[in-house]
Length: 386
Image (cartoon, rainbow, N blue to C red; front, side, top):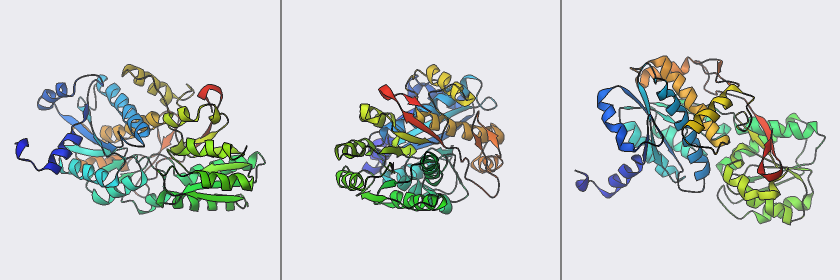
């Protein structure tokens, strides 16, 4: 009886039953439950921030994944089996991400975890859950890739690859005075190592480097002032939700430097918060431009988002969509009677897989997925030109 459960168990149960996405994104959650007894359902789960500082990225990734699975189910699912996506909110707290992941792992009907959001959250999850696949963590931290178990299948390129792209772009444009701002935490320190390596490849030395207290810290003004005083031509920022605040502080400090952000800076909320001060800001993107119809995967994504009732396309939801596409390919190869073990083997068998303009590859010796990185620049009115 629910009344007899402890308070922590009741809280966990509420989080795990926030949403079920089955055949229709707009159908009431309870309508999907009778179908579970009638036909085989392939269940996967996500835990991410749906109410905290990274809500825009988390809920965006969830909508993209839901749009893909909705389309897949409309076309017959996987060998007739529907795919059901469960969601739990971890509020961007590593301890909740771990608790949610353990709860999903304890449910033997859940085959895999999809798109965990955040460096510390992913680290906590992959340490706690090693019995099932974790597909498409939304973090580019290179150090996690080096320490992750073979059950983690990365999709996006690492921050190291993003930084290489940004520095190479600046060097190609003749901009050699480069500054760098990063949070003084594990995420920032990991990106710092990648920045230093990428600068060395270009035979450049940083003009200035500055830190903020942490990824979610609003105290960005001292870093902005230090960078503005040094006068770099380009500033690369390894900031997430605080990116708009930093850019505004940088401009207020008198700097006219070109600003490049990592993919974590490019949420719809950040773009909106930047306003006209975002014009000319460039971002590394680890998926094709979601605003262009150049790539097949984007055309399908746009259509499937619209079919699910969403018009707010952007990088977070396209990344979630692509992650779901990769997981679905594993499910297809494992078949409608997939188990956790057969799904792991099926995902490992994916090599040089084209999702429609972006290639993903694994195999027995690799789990790194893609090195795709492009550059998108904000133009007038918050529109991107990539």
